[in-house]
Length: 128
Image 1 (tube, rainbow, N blue to C red):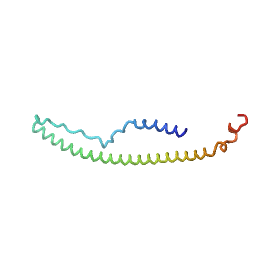
Image 2 (spheres, rainbow, N blue to C red; image 1 turned 90 degrees about the vertical axis):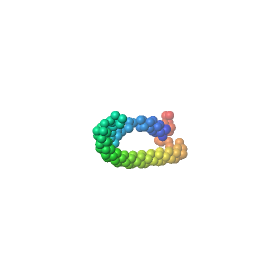
Image 3 (tube, one colour; image 1 turned 90 degrees about the horizontal axis):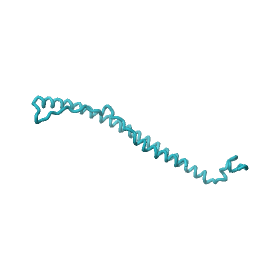
Image 4 (tube, rainbow, N blue to C red; image 1 turned 45 degrees about the vertical axis):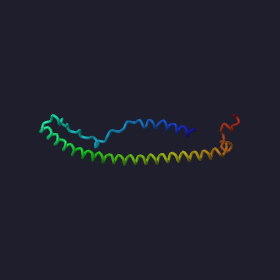
């Protein structure tokens, strides 16, 4: 009964964990918005030149931002792998403990009811 209750609790908790709100992106993955690109059909020479300069500066900034985001993503992946390893170890320990209990419970049950009666239990008291 205890094992069934434990399994039921775990099954009910799993969907709740899956519904948690994802964390916000790290600051390293917030990007500068791109510059406004003029309409080539109507833009002046000056507007296109300014846009070209703005695009070059933005591209340099974006490359730096992308590198920082990549580094942050790699760090988060390492954290996720460590968390997954800890989870798997905890799950293995849980399963081993439950299996150990089941084996001991089977041994206990196999002894038979007569050898388990304890002094003063309702089964051995003369008034019951």
